[in-house]
Image (cartoon, rainbow over all chains, first blue to last red; front, side, top):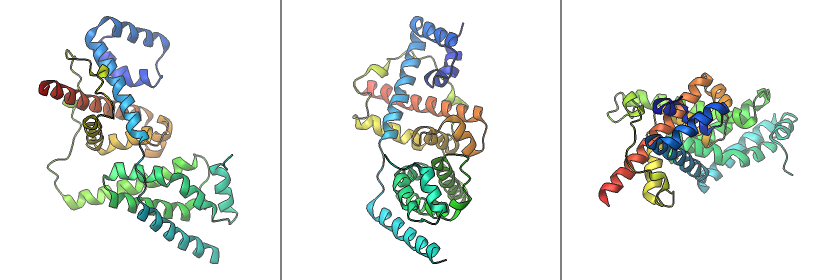
Length: 83
Length: 198
């Protein structure tokens, strides 16, 4: 049977769906029975959820940087075409 | 239906260099975001973005297609970022506030406090939570942050991340896990502090 310490080690694998089903069942059992484990489990899960949301928020490429990139690449493309 | 990256790469190989522009259009945002989050500022991120696509343009004929084009491109970007970081570190000599993910921070204490995951404030719409999380991500040590960003932001698998960074699969998993624990702890601290204030 897994304990709180073991749960700490297994959380990422649990949420990344990399754990065997019997170990998942042990995690679920511990979480349902132990308050501290449940808090850790829920807050870890929420952290992953918030991280996914923040990762989905793309920082747009500023216009001047986008323009500069295309100008530089156009010069390179022209150079290559001339060879 | 849009043309696959592989077809665009093939077109480039056949001399249609304009196909590269489509690849740039597809990935400039992702590369910029990755660079911005690793480097931490707009100036370095824009330099990395430009250098990445210049290198990719020059090296694309040597791309063997063993990995996805995106993974290959991110590898170039990460290498440029890490090289720049190394140079910056050399210039700094000593950093007094260099964040270190110590064992102490990594240890998880049994929580006897509130389960903040159920709080209506635990959302990115709450600017303080968003700021706390962003700051925590930025303060992750570089090797953890890079793994975290490649897995999350750029959607690479553990295996792809391991190959890209030339580290083992267990190392990727361990760094990602420790990064998540670290971020959870920072959020827990925020909610504890919020509870004291309220």
